[in-house]
Length: 133
Image 1 (cartoon, helix red, strand yellow):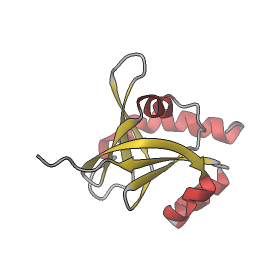
Image 2 (image 1 turned 90 degrees about the vertical axis):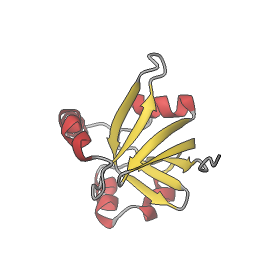
Image 3 (image 1 turned 30 degrees about the vertical axis):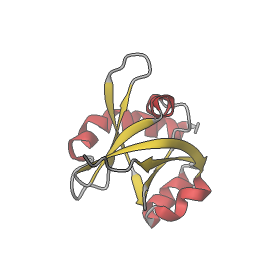
Image 4 (image 1 turned 180 degrees about the vertical axis):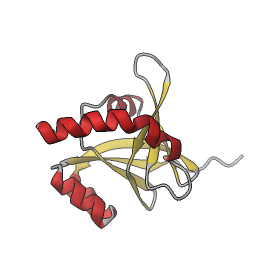
């Protein structure tokens, strides 16, 4: 994703990230959180995202492509947590897929945004089965 509109969006997103994290993942919020561990630091990070849930999977559009640190962290570790609607879901099996495979699971307004910003890929992760003692 390149160009002046995309660069402006990137700056806006970085600026608004702390604000977005205040409500992301909470009940009634349209935004989720990806909780991931840094590849080098081992530190836990939280990134606000728009995640669509379908059966045992979450789909996350990648408007900045595949070079973001959070995505590299998830792919590198092979797992993460998604906080959505007040619940935390442990996920694994991360896979970058063409946006065409994920589009149908997003709301119409999100689909329009993906088209407008030429989003080409999405991340698919699968919810880990719940452990029962």
